Image (cartoon, rainbow, N blue to C red; front, side):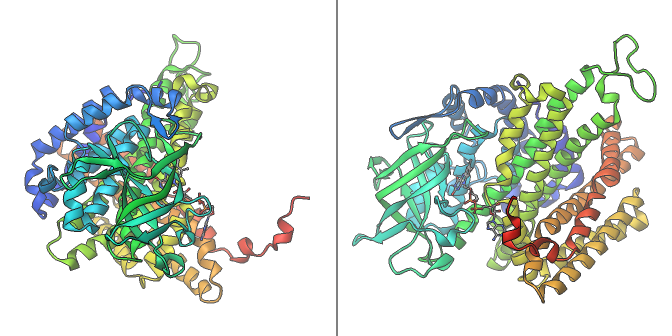
Length: 600
Ligand SMILES: Cc1cc2nc3c(=O)[nH]c(=O)nc-3n(C[C@H](O)[C@H](O)[C@H](O)COP(=O)(O)OP(=O)(O)OC[C@H]3O[C@@H](n4cnc5c(N)ncnc54)[C@H](O)[C@@H]3O)c2cc1C
């Protein structure tokens, strides 16, 4: 069974020493409440809940899974009690407006909570996690009446929310969606259709579930331009907020799947179910993007969580498993062999997971500042600017951190040798649970196309240019006056190479549009390695400065510097290979005729 210790010192380092969150909180209204004491108290309480309540349920959830009985779904033993503690603690509305019963704290504080909960028990965390997306969507796109009707109970956690997009024939290409919404004389709609793979779509944790559903109104244009968004409650809600009759929404079945067994993945059937339009007709997909971006950052956290949990659990094993003698001389003479942590290859695997976890944390928490600005902006212009910046980073965070999370989980399993493949230690569960993260909320391939297509080329390189400028600015500043000038030089060099590969790829795309798709995955991975290098360079500067001043915990800062060195020496060079692939001919991917794919 895995164990979890909340990495509170590292979170504190990232928030306060690297990203200066207290300065950031002075720039947003909700930040006034987020004093250092408040942030520390919330982190400590979330850590306690994650370590003591959720972590022990991680294995229970995996082994028991959810059960379906004629439309009702039971969650694993202990999930319901843990959820009640979540409600009692007032956690769900932490970052939501006080007018709806939330605590009005910044969105970024909610991410700390999500990281700790998700690392301890991802399956459990998905129930309140999906609900956060529903809350954001209703809050941003709902009418005053809808907000008053749904937000209070979503905020206090009495109800949860879902996101119903996928249908059997389409997940990535939602333009093919078929669910129908027929307008009724009273202004409501009757929804008919079947959604599949709906996370937390049915469960026994709450009295009501608010489904956020994509469907088409009669005569709507084909494709993505004809999709609208609806609120469809499991139980009708009376004007006074009390529960009414059961709506015609039913869970047809739950999936039997590779991992995240504790979270119900449901077929949800809408059979003339009453729904209410959210936002404007035919603009549903855009409105849903509020939801998707929140969920995608949430899924990026799943990648970070996998790296963290994998590292934490592989480390003690590597210290306490003895095999052969170290190449550089005996280290444990009283044992029949040396602890495997003395073998370079085992260290490579551990350091890879450590570097991805700590680098990923800095990437996510820095991006979270944009989500604070999005919610707290005074003007639409400021809101749009923050949303665009976050939108550019989202595919990198989501795809790169989930791919690297999966690699960490695989490496950590490998540290255990054959024992990693056996259920007892829980390492294979980390891998199985993490595997979904590169698939849902837009596969890595879809994120890569979104990044290079919408966020770079169609944006006219504006956000891309701004991002590069940030890297150059940091690089040149520290090349002259920093403590780790070598890292700044590398950062500049890799950014120049990235620009060059991008220009070449765009030039090829002007002759052959497939050039973009053929390069997209490598472009995304290059972006990921480069962004993470930026944060490792930043963390190394802080750690080197602190060490030089003799302030604080020297072992902590020394470990940061050594992990940064590993990142720059051993992981960042992978970007060169991605650059090389990006620069290769499109024909090497698209040249083979379909007939020649045939197995002979
Ligand atoms: C456990 C689980 C939980 C889920 N939870 C939810 C949920 O809560 N709500 C919800 O609505 N959905 C949910 N999903 C659905 C999930 O988001 C989709 O499965 C996912 O988006 C992929 O869609 P698809 O399965 O239809 O694959 P497809 O869209 O058929 O894709 C198949 C492959 O083709 C690739 N591909 C497709 N189009 C392109 C393109 N243009 N360029 C490059 N590559 C392309 C994809 O990357 C993928 O590799 C969940 C799925 C699972 C398994």
